[in-house]
Image 1 (tube, rainbow, N blue to C red):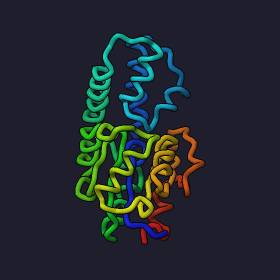
Image 2 (cartoon, helix red, strand yellow; image 1 turned 45 degrees about the horizontal axis):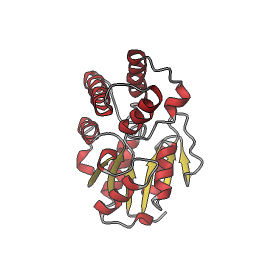
Image 3 (cartoon, rainbow, N blue to C red; image 1 turned 120 degrees about the vertical axis):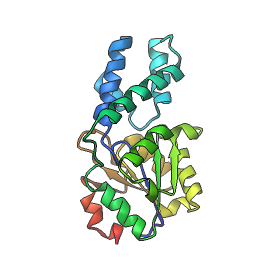
Image 4 (tube, one colour; image 1 turned 180 degrees about the vertical axis):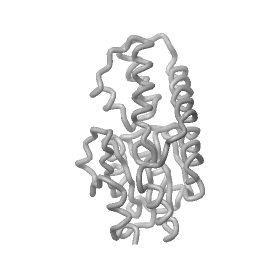
Length: 216
């Protein structure tokens, strides 16, 4: 497999924050009386909180400004992570990151999360030094499933999109990667129920990549 760069999603790929994200989401549903099913929530995975709350606001005619909802959500989300003493990278992903870096592969994070969240997680796991580029979904015109975020990462790495591989765990993220003209590895997060069928290759754990030609 020939490639010059690997672009990682954050949530569900580097850190398992879906349970925390869903916990905060449920708190908001209770607080604002939103009757949102789990399957509807899952359709938002991979998008920015701005996109998520815009959709919800249209449906429920909330009087609260979207930017205020995003700030409240982010503050609560980070407060839970900051108070946690046992958060760890998803098994094997940190080993893969270091392996790829040692072989001269350019690395980026392209996540729908805010830059504040991305940097916090990378610093918490001591992984910041391995990534040449960080792109937040809040820094591009359109969030996943549009390709903007991955094209921006490739541009910052100065590498052609077709020479990039994306690692994603969400349907929206895989759509975005393929729309960007990149190959995509779908990680089947055991906590997620996402359609990975458009990915070029799927894995159930990162040891499959560590032990394969991918990292050799």
